Image 1 (tube, rainbow, N blue to C red):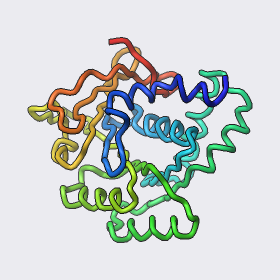
Image 2 (tube, rainbow, N blue to C red; image 1 turned 45 degrees about the vertical axis):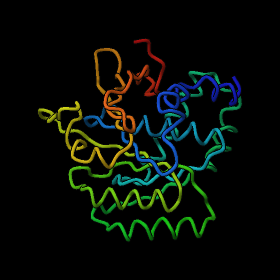
Image 3 (cartoon, rainbow, N blue to C red; image 1 turned 45 degrees about the horizontal axis):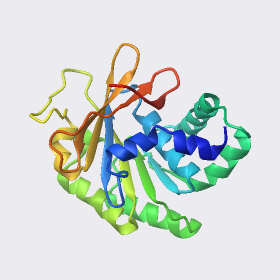
Image 4 (cartoon, rainbow, N blue to C red; image 1 turned 120 degrees about the vertical axis):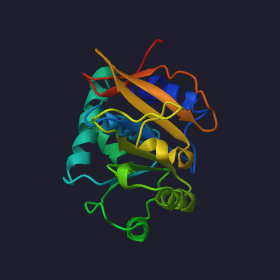
Length: 236
């Protein structure tokens, strides 16, 4: 299968339709789940889809291992290639990887001014113009409306859409009246889209908890396949 066919058949098109055309410039979205359920895989799948369409992605990682995110991209792309029988796999990967930059922010206590300056310096030195920022490993337990506003300011400054991952507590979830668990529920007014990954027996259900101003979003007809770690269509 050619790259163009994969783009057309991708379940990310379903996600975009559910999001009224996509998350959108200057908007903030989050995938939330317990550790190890598939948040990073989901973010990387979205990122690769954008890269395949020629869009540039800046991936900010708070992971301890600087190679952690690179390995995820290789793994998810390999699974995509096998699933869709992609022709010229290595050539395709070499082509799209030019549309990605990774900024490793190991110090979780780094200030937002430092983050902003790190992004500005990287983009200035590379002449890279991203359409999407992926923020993986940001600690939502330590977040506040003020800190989320700082992220919103960055999204506005560069006119990018911004996707986060947020880890839920392993103990009993503190769910609010809208069905949104902590620690994300404290910040729901600062987020435009909230998607929870709910692990079931044979797959991980993608549950839309917030979609802009909708109080009860439609069901999201998508799942995460635990064997391939890819977002896939799912009849509900």
